[in-house]
Image: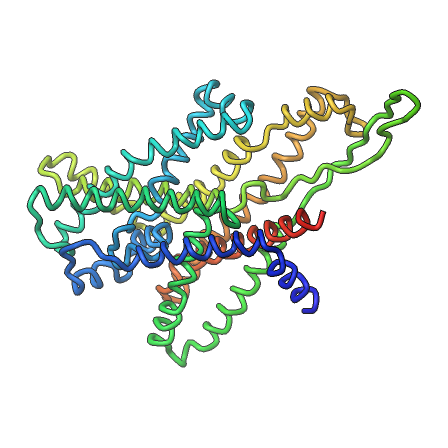
Length: 423
């Protein structure tokens, strides 16, 4: 406890950190204010009915930071930008030029890559807003609008999504932590009191042992997430001795830390985004006049509503995206080349291609365990809901995983800032 207070005092005593924390909190407050400004023409009674027990909307509400439940001007949240990021990441596997831009051209290449993601966000936000508003209008949640008013609503929702993307990037640049993750985190935390009230309202004394077991399970999950997030596999590295003038450099031994979960919470967010977007699209297409398209769309939507199908798809996507994101962000070949250039080698392994294969082999095994853990945690709430019937926990595991991962990342970045200021 004393160590905690010492760290807090160190954070608050630093002028630069105080400024960064203030900027972060200010921008999150702006986001929360935007999330309570509704779009025109909402039927609140139909809105409550439409949202009750809807798993798709629960997932969408995570991305929107709770803004979707009020149909606010930022109802899409950071979903379009995340979808754009997924598409851009996939393009690095298809086009070598995109991969070189992202991995080899340094900061300038990453800035250009991010700019392409921003540009792609705009048409995706327009498509999502059009599909979702049309769906809500046909469900009676939004009153019938004339074409001009409908287009204005699309522009408002699209502009809200772009503004939220801008806020997230400003937090990342001038604040503390990853802006997009913090926006999702803020929305989850803001909905926590409502979730507690829902659980209290539906409290059944006969299920008291179940509630206690769920609290214990939540604590175990939090502990497991922290352990897995912090777990590392150290690979020993030795630097060869080099003589320059009268001085001898190198000859020291250190280690290369490989994280058990290199990708953090990103696979969960990517998987949710990839599950949500097709459901919105097919629900929109289910309303068209063409009988064949309507039939296919209704079949796909009904299939995705099946808990077994949904759970299997969710698990597979999380597992696949863990490998995918690790492959994009961590290149064993580049790492091997850098070690060789600096006169470093792994004992018992030849420099160059053998080192790259050795690191890749270890990373594959580590990623398999991390991906399996993320997949199980992601679908665990669906299993719990099937066993207990408590619908408030439909997305609880995903939300819990995001919250814990964001808090750990935030603490690390604060500690890094404190250490940098001390030096």
